[in-house]
Length: 144
Length: 185
Length: 153
Image (tube, rainbow over all chains, first blue to last red; front, side):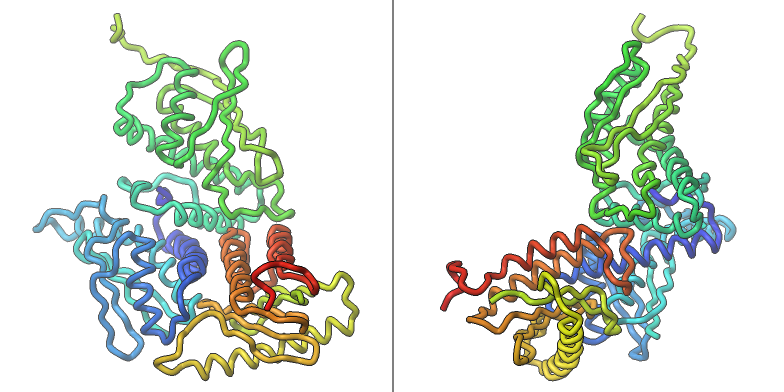
């Protein structure tokens, strides 16, 4: 509903900033009655489970890590992308790229939310969204 | 920069897919971002209204499809539908329509509960901010799609200490659809 | 027995809110307050380090941090690393459940205040609503001589 913005890096940064604040606030709300989380992995697992559930009505489907500070969160049915349809297989690259860019424009806000939450809980990081096969997408967390 | 301009996005996530708290917090964060980007509060008010307008023109189709009602003929009926059906569908809250002008071209949409403003405490330096101005834009945009040009202005605002949210809606022009034959003839 | 002071301290030990419940605290008292809170933060760090064993509960409530000659100091640590410190007048019995209840209400108040879009994390809390509600929460703690069931030994 709030994706009525011009596309481009400035808009992406603005949406990410909007999401970041929301992520901080949601981190406060969703951890209010929870015992204290421990290390970065515990916090990321919390985001993959309880946080994702409260926010996106499902949990992250797959969590991968290289054990050196990079975590890839995969959601195979990302709710906020569900109304987008993937271009049919064999479509020309330009069309596929346009669809990818459109999907990406929907991911800046949630990526910001995830980054805001993680940073607020003590895990300084960057979060890079990547629309894979719609409605699947990944969020790559790089702990700083 | 966030701008209230049109974009290529055609299928935004619907409200059922975003939980209410997140919706409220996201709106608040957008307001905050607009203040950071524009600084001038009057400009922010305009941006919020424009954002609402862009949403309003798109919401009508979704609403008509879901509510399964045909387009209303009168401003009075339309106002009732907005208050009793559209607002509950999109904002999860209903409003009352009051204070009709004698010529039936002006009325008030009154809300005592407004999810957009949950948790909000307006600081003194932003007392000129029309925090809920997106609603004024949504009403204007939605009604324009059903051929009614209206002007909306806030008369009361709970964030400024009033006891309700009152949006005054004034019908400027009702552009009748020009069909050679009417359905109910 | 009552609550003498409340403090909210941020993750970088930045002060978010510090309030003495004494109607007219002297400068001396305020300095003492600052000092007590400062020591409390050290005590919080120690407790948190000690509690990292597998069988220890990782509760937000840290219990009694330490007694001073005038106060009993209790601590609470949120997942966002905000510390809430409560100073109780050192009179009568203080029950853990009661302290925990106050902390929970203060925590909930903080979370709702932080949900205000005009809240700035890391900066001191400036909210009339927060102050008013905090006063209500803190006033619930019984004063000396009060006969409220459940709080007497």
